[in-house]
View 1: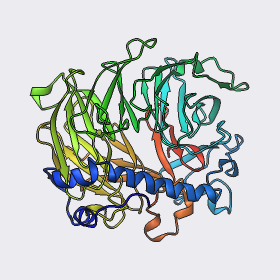
View 2: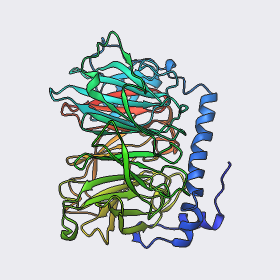
View 3: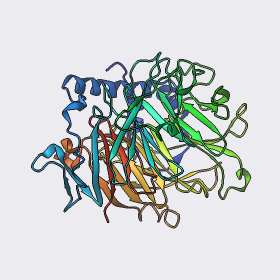
View 4: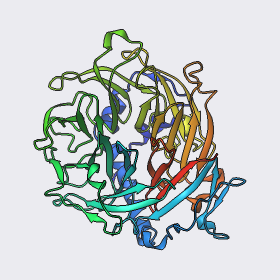
Length: 479
């Protein structure tokens, strides 16, 4: 491996048994987080694993058979959804979720496959569209009333960039904002309303000259994740390398008010690298900040809360770590209209056997953010199958989680405000999109495979799941 971690630092990360909030360990942070060593180590670990899988042919999505349009639905019966009778690669463990469609990346127009981020949009007349990130761009599809993916076309990666498995998408009104870890990619902004009149019989390959707005103000064109604040009207590029840039790979703000002239009003560099974030107008119990523009940053070893109302001069409200922090990855507030709690995932605690993640079961960390200046880590939920947690989103009383090879998991989190220990959190449904690891001890492998992301906000109840190897699935809660 190209990057190695200091043994003492690694031991320190692995020594905690119970997760509680704590003051950041500045010496440890400087040594492995702020330096970039931890993030480079994780990316190198992933790339080495993915390279080996490419060599084995596992990333050739054309080998995975798309679901026939003649099949209405594959119900989850007795814990199994059997798409192809007797074939273990098409027999999916499940609970409370039925399969409505699967389309391979190849059949979704990609030459490279390798799925990552995703997002969706509902048109004013109720049609539901998805953007599916792939290594060579983004595929577009409509989810029909019957739950089928109707391929409409694609937007290739930006012309000056090479393919990259890291591609993230978020929504802004009818637009999607796309970033990538590829050098020179910048930020693409595409209006999904362009899909309204596309004939599925003639899918459209859109271009990067006439069909998008483009922001080229990133230091090297790379970003790790993107975010939007629809209420205020801006996007954010996070983790834009290099760390030595004036914005320190923090939050780079992009004004979306004029799509013909995308500009940046400033950046938040105060806590260095930001892996992911959620930016919202604050509504909640902390009266001091009501109405302010707040970003919750997931910053490698901390939950860092920013006041970004003044984009030219943002400030850090608090910076809090927790026992066993290995790589603070992503999270979401429970209620955007009353921001009292959030859930957070750590991508490397299971892989690193650190803290609560030591047994290898994904951990959801629960935080009380009723005081933005003094957030508290109050509890946690441990998943029932081994694996790694990646991206999660909240819709109503439920957390929807993409747990790599473990698939999509849906948790009932309605008990958290009354019992923030997490003892009342329960799994109500799951769909395991990666049967290859089902027979491993604990029900799964602790590896970077399977689902990267999903989109759980359609009124129809359909959920699109994007996966690295195979393609996109559509599932829905069982009746």
